[in-house]
Length: 77
Image 1 (cartoon, rainbow, N blue to C red):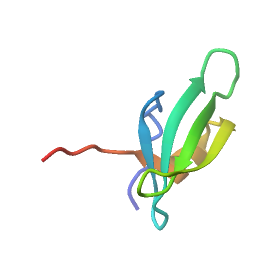
Image 2: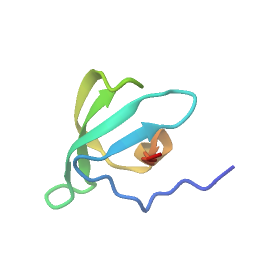
Image 3: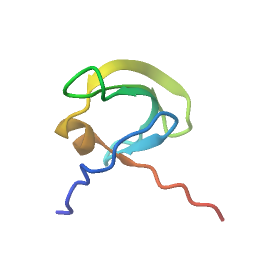
């Protein structure tokens, strides 16, 4: 089983892809590292076509985040 990258930190404006078997996208709206510990994240959950499904506010950025999502790699070509 591949190692989960827990070093990548989501940034506002980025999109993260859910891990299989789901095909969802988390569009990062905000992340708060400064005030709260552990950090919290707000993101818009989108389907595979980019249509909004739900706004998730103040989710804890913990190991569960990296188990559910991975950075989305944008390829041009």
